[in-house]
Image (cartoon, rainbow, N blue to C red):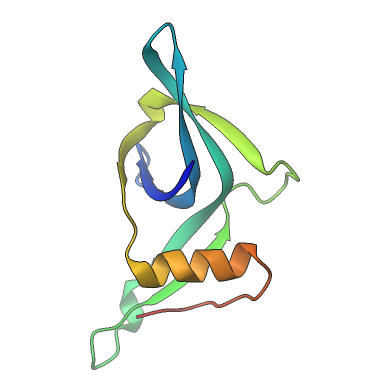
Length: 101
């Protein structure tokens, strides 16, 4: 598994440890471990053009740490920028940070 940023069909952006699920040599879905939604506050641009980013658990009302989604719900998967990856790692490892440049 690897920490990636997934963009879903509804335009939500999730950061998580992600693994592609294969059945009969065809991709069928993704296993998301500790998925968090990125909330970008574009209205609070600073003069240095930084934005406020907040990470929140993707599905708030579950204790499940691993969630399976079908592959047709994912538009793309990309490598997150270092600061977002670091923010995510700090959050899931217990020392929370709520914003980044």
